[in-house]
Amino acid sequence: MDGPAIEAEGLVRVFKKTRAVDGIDLVVESGEIYGFLGPNGAGKSTTVHMLTTLLPPTAGTARVNGYDVVHQGPQVRSSIGAALQEAALDPLLTGREHLRLQASLQGMPHDIRRRRADELLHRVGLSEAGDRKVKTYSGGMKRRLDLALALVHSPRILFLDEPTTGLDIQSRTALWDEVGRLTRDDGVTVFLTTQYLEEADVLADRVGIIDHGHIVAEGTPDELKASVGRPTVEVVPLDAGEHERAAAIIARFGDPCGSEHGVAVRLRSSEADLAGIVRALDAENLKVEQLQLHQPSLDDVFLAKTGRSLEGAAEEEEGERGGLAMEPA
Ligand SMILES: Nc1ncnc2c1ncn2[C@@H]1O[C@H](COP(=O)(O)OP(=O)(O)OP(=O)(O)O)[C@@H](O)[C@H]1O
Ligand SMILES: [Mg+2]
Image (cartoon, rainbow, N blue to C red; front, side):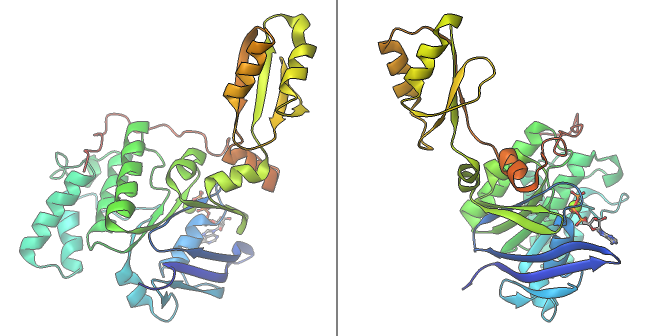
């Protein structure tokens, strides 16, 4: 495909008085993992619903795989797979039955359906649970089945709305690996929403931070972090009487800034020269109790842009216990 995988211009969605999405512009290149990071109610799902043709925009335009989401719905839908936040699964069907049904809806020949179902169950770690009814699945297992369903027709573009919410750490990491593999090996473009800073940081090539229906910051995780400030280095001297001497030494590396227990500088470059600092302290024979590097986080970015911290909203939810860990692909 030529051109970007996803493009939106001035996308708006109003519900009665709520401007859930309030003028979003974005471009997601083919093969990219784009992370849409924001707190509850920011407008993430509403954006996904418009891009996947489930909800018409109030204003603005969007193209997915080059097709207009309003006027070319069928073409958009055949280009994409979507695992939505509210998975629509039938509790009385098994995982395997869901996959075969989806494969037949996609018009796959009978013998291929079966193989595809086995392959996808294995890929998301549900081989053993494949013949159990979905009503016996944990929340995490349902998320994984939903991902498998989105992959049945090998879509070029994948939408994942909070794919790891409620997963235990192990399943979350396995899902990250799987998403990484899909982009790396199959060239799939992924648009993923998340409330987890770490997820956006680890997984996304580029991140858009959304708040109150607006994209408030966008860039690679490193660019975003660098935009709020350079890393700081904090030194706590072993001897409390040495604070001034320590401050003078580390001042060679950056500009003095506040520190609770010792002395600190904001480094001049974003490349931390920790070894240089250690050598300088050592050369002056200054004994150190603690030396710490603080990198700005995506939460610092969120705070700088919105005045609020995302960390509280992104608290780990109670993970699924006892679910199967995903099997490696
Ligand atoms: N069908 C609807 N009718 C009315 N208001 C809605 C509807 N869907 C969403 N909203 C409102 O639009 C805003 C954005 O909701 P949305 O579901 O897009 O947020 P989100 O970023 O996906 O949040 P979450 O992280 O909780 O899933 C919220 O204020 C929500 O209450
Ligand atoms: Mg949502």
